[in-house]
Image (cartoon, rainbow, N blue to C red):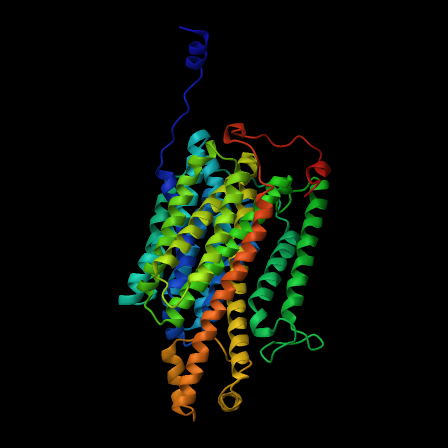
Length: 556
């Protein structure tokens, strides 16, 4: 027997832990992903049930994402202080309560409140999942578990579109959320298979940091979400107030950015004083780690924009059923799922930088292709090609940037990595959805008003029937015809108004896709600063940095 064989025999084999705890962890991720992915599928059902515009349902997505992004850092510290398993059980119960409210919502306000409550549960659940994986698994099993976590997110999105589409078409939109009540109960009982993780009572919760971080994210999200209603420049009549005639929305975004910088400065001060920060800035110390955060924000924002735009067009404009929406989106969602699962196999051949650049280039090409070929039928093969190409790029990027952050940080900072991931993902999803809604409605309004200039008689008559500055939004042909039946417009003018609206809707979607492609191009730049290493060079369990507090925040 050679010396190398003796050395190998002397090393203990890696203990293989049970995968049952991972079922609970993956289902915990699926709860959140299924919920937020079900909202676009339920778009037309909620619009009809609550008699509200589509942008109100988009606000539900923003409310959920806003709550997670604003309080996920607090959730990470609660996990550290009281133990991840205890927090996991508590927030699963809270999420189940939110789904009860969602399933039986009598009004849109009740629905928004349910999504806010679900978001608060998700704020503690997101960092909890990463901490639980770090506590349960090590070595290759830990890497596999992280891959499963990413796949669970994508898989839940696929199921949400499929199940939500079938139920929404034949029963209604509510049962899709009722399923999550049952799953929450199952996850709660499976949580007793998790290893107990002791809390650390010595962990301080930075209350001022919570206020600064939450305030920053709330102002940024509300600002973006109300750009269309309150005005991009001058304030509209819908704005709650104005600043010397200007819309408050841009000022809210700027104030949120100021609060975000104040949070970073305050965190540096706490770390320099040796106190526990709300977010350990070591997780974004290097340029590569910051590039991963920027890339994550870009790709999730693009996903949110596309996930809102496509169901809006299929359900509201074309008037199709939720199951037809699910079928149209299925190639995209399945591609994201399989790519997120299989991209790990390419880490042995390509570096994160190469995969990142490829992902954004592919997303850009896909969006340009969609803007060129899209007509009035999303099921056309040429459109499916674009959605599949975007799904490959998006699935590869989401898994890649998350793994870059996890492998660059020590186990002790797993909760901070989880909170950073949750903040970035949900802020990006909320901003992407809000910008998409504001952008498409703004483009639609601009194109309709521009077309009406060539028809002054039609414009004058429409102005007597409706407020053209504030009431233009995406509606189906059936609802628009029903509206015109209550007006004094002649049949010829109704036909002309319908034609103008149809052309404006398609142009708005095409221009919106082109703008998304431009945003995807910008994502190539942070992708070019991702690490250029091979996975074999990543230390399996990197140590905490041996630096003074003031050194630890340098460059953050």
